[in-house]
Image 1 (cartoon, rainbow, N blue to C red):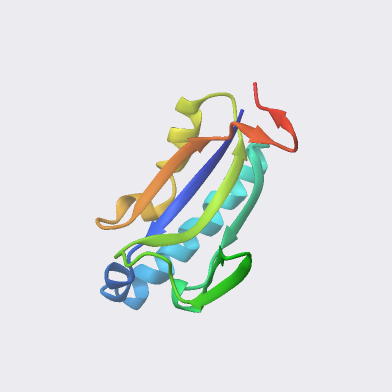
Image 2: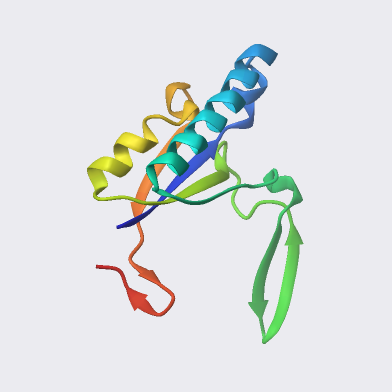
Length: 123
């Protein structure tokens, strides 16, 4: 079963952390990735730039309209994700609990099973 484990970031929460706490998060992600690879559950991971660097695309009257910055004004934004292949939702939740962000008040980690990929429904 494939799962997307997404990390939702609140810049104010991150800004309030010490350099040591930020370094610990980075180190924790490194250990987490190595453990996922060793278990064979790792597919990929990506970190995203701040939403202020995003482009929002919509189509109006048949023409694309592009604006800068995030679509929604929100405290939290998608900061990155892990894509994993594991035996169950319970295992995906167990993995998500190992992500350093999950231990920080104000940051969120979400687990969602993949329903559709590459033209096929997931089992």
